[in-house]
Image (tube, rainbow, N blue to C red):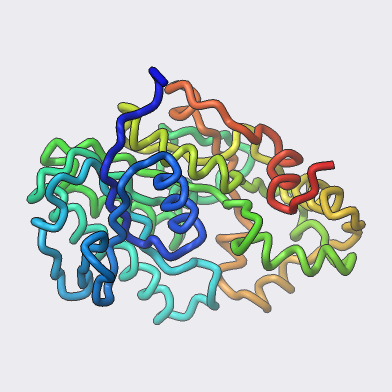
Length: 304
């Protein structure tokens, strides 16, 4: 096959989550060699050990690696945002990224694909945000700014760095849908607050395809990993109810979300980003799931 990329060796940090697990499977299916970067004792020579807290990482372990993908970071919506948890969110992203960036430089790895998020843009309201949009305000936006800045050692050394600003990943297992589907299955789903906030979604399948694309194509800098048609939360609720064949009659008021979820509700759910994948589409990426209906049919297993 003339357009099939040559087999590569790809090292992945943060490989145990939904995205990392799916990425490893896709890389191996394409006959690439995968080296998970792990904190525990490695299981054989196809794993690399590190300790991001202490900065321990032998760059010799990355010898011959064609690209490193860094997906490290605990989930922003996993717990209420106490001061301590906010620090965990920062420490689980920024410190590991600095360690990996420096190791990539010392090992001579030519490509670093580093996770980030569309939270970089803050609450954009109705304004469309492509990769040229400025950083927004708030904790999540500043977190993303500092997270991306931690790749500076690699960027300054001439490594091709892709900052993968991911939206809400719609997956058949785990992620946002695993929390929402039980509510909608009981007919308790609905739009959040006014329903006008934008949700920059992407299917897990297209997320993985976009990461592979970023590894193999000459992309660099910020790249929005979002579907081509962001929707409001009202449109999302309608589409999810349709996919699950359940009504979504309810309005979940903003004060209730703040009471349940605290500050995360303010930035993560009551604000949103109308982010579009301009860089991906300019580079020729073609989505498998172009609409929220197609993505939810895939993620819920309801193809018709």
